[in-house]
Length: 459
Image 1 (cartoon, rainbow, N blue to C red):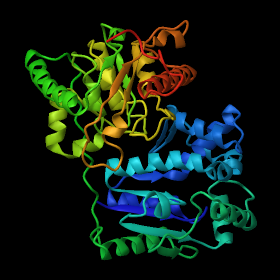
Image 2 (cartoon, helix red, strand yellow):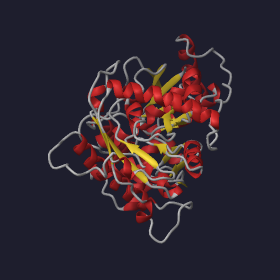
Image 3 (cartoon, rainbow, N blue to C red):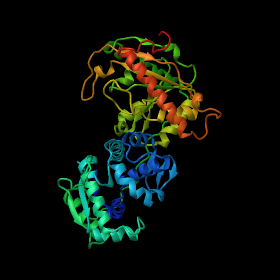
Image 4 (spheres, rainbow, N blue to C red):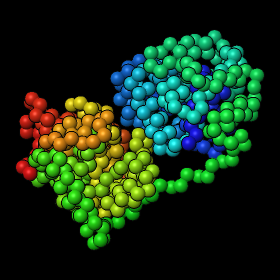
């Protein structure tokens, strides 16, 4: 595994060097600055005040941002737009908000974790995002040189050394993830160095740390991850699933006894089961909701174990890259729903702590709107006590499972059928409605005051 973190101020050559280094090593590259620019552009286009931290954080959480050869926001190519003078003028202010940085840092770490190797550039990569990177590099250059480079690159004509110093001061002085040299970083002044010279120094440092050979060769392309077929289950598959479910449900009843309330709310056809997520055993508890075969979207990191991956595939699970628009996972999930099977999507994306259901992801809402199937919210009361974050083993705990009334996505997509392009406003609205229902159900499942009657019919 080779992860290179490249930090430095504007105009120091990060992007050029990162691209050249990634090409030499045959690795993927992530320009994290483009992610902050994407949020800044969206804020300008949607009239969000760059100083409104809460609104910007909500905006960032709702955007689909893809950074590769091009930069896309919600499927639209914005590679040129994010380099405009208007974006340049506000991106530092947008990036200074801790909540915005927290969301994008989470996505950046997920990118690195999913790939295992890569070149990541930005302003807090070695200090915050990837402090354990194979090699941390800090690129710098004289402000006058940097100003010339940016003018030549068309970033902002007339931008001088003084304005760059002011931007440096803002980046270094912000409370969240300030620009600074990471401990142990290789510091390179690129003022009088060419790209090949800078890349050569980085490669030599990597070779000295065992990261790559002195003359690296391109790595083979990453093998495509498995994509289970979305056909309906055969008799053998169903038999295997029933045996595994019987074992899982038996263990769940033994370790986590408690009622399942509201099963009458389950639709007969395909649907999306959307449980709260507080522990690693939530899938085990959620399996008690129905005897039908449940298909799961499981974080793709699990597929690194070949044995675990094959077992999950046999049980009908599919990998998903979290914190990104995973088109392969979306296509597979839509196929499952078209085949008439229910699928489990944890809207919170990862395990959360505490009583609040907040910042849920939009995948469940998008799938429901696209496929025209209902979402069934489910609260798993007590699961956090069963296996809180940081625990290595579950503990016997009583749980209470509340199945809520199915949510019809058609109510959020008036005048249009399913299967076509899903309006962003509809996805936002359905996601927020789902969040509210999950909060009500979780409050009721945990016995908090004022939450009675949140569940549907008896179980």
